[in-house]
Picture (tube, one colour):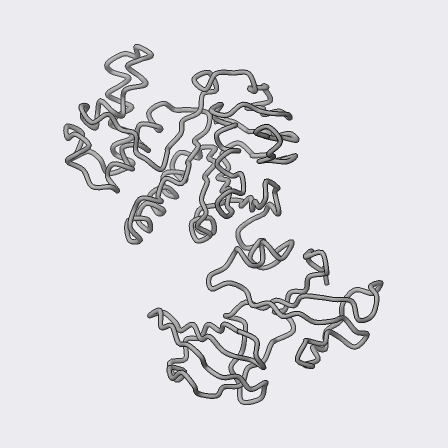
Length: 351
């Protein structure tokens, strides 16, 4: 396997800039997930690492060796796409072994590689079938098996689960995580699904507007988002935000509510500030601020309440099934240790 270094990487199409000064160190054997909304540059970054897109400026190094000018086949990486890209006229075994046969590997080596990959992915019963006789999840496993038999320095996944239904995505996430645990392979995985990012990654790279917004473990991004974008993108249901102003005795929200919190000194009084709290951290209690239930979304494992709080929308996640009736009145409070604060530029205020 290999380490991968991205050094001040940029990509432009004419005057349109897609990526701007991306820096990233990926350790040998690490599972990195690039996450962000459509158009943020994550797939472009992956394709540049693979050699499918030219680098405008900056450098890509695999095991300390510059690969900017190397052809994709010479970078020793394997890519799994959203589309399975299987040869319909070939059996599962021949699809998986195609790259090895091109390299004229011995029959014994090919058979051993296919057997090992098929065992890891549960494909032994399907080796003689053709892709049309397989389900979507089985076809994706074949695509992963084809990557495994190559024994590359790194695996690149470009939204491989997007075409699958919800239950299959859940199963395939578990299989990809198990595969990584078995192979300890350096992996870079692109997705717009923050649940996939949270469940798969050793570290998440959150991207927006062609820039890296934050890099860290899933819980680091969840518990201490660096800015408003990361705070709003990571987490489902999304974080609640309130506008307010900073004062010497705390933060006063637009409706006049005073949050008695201690923020770092140095900022001007009455400076604009954004307060965030995750829906599961809002408390439903007898003592608090009155709110009206507008909408109830039962999920089975809990309930998402959409409330109106002094004209402001507020989401609450609760396991209490007493709150199931739109129009009823509830009281909410915000534990100060669960509050997040962001300055006028959208950056986290450390405290």
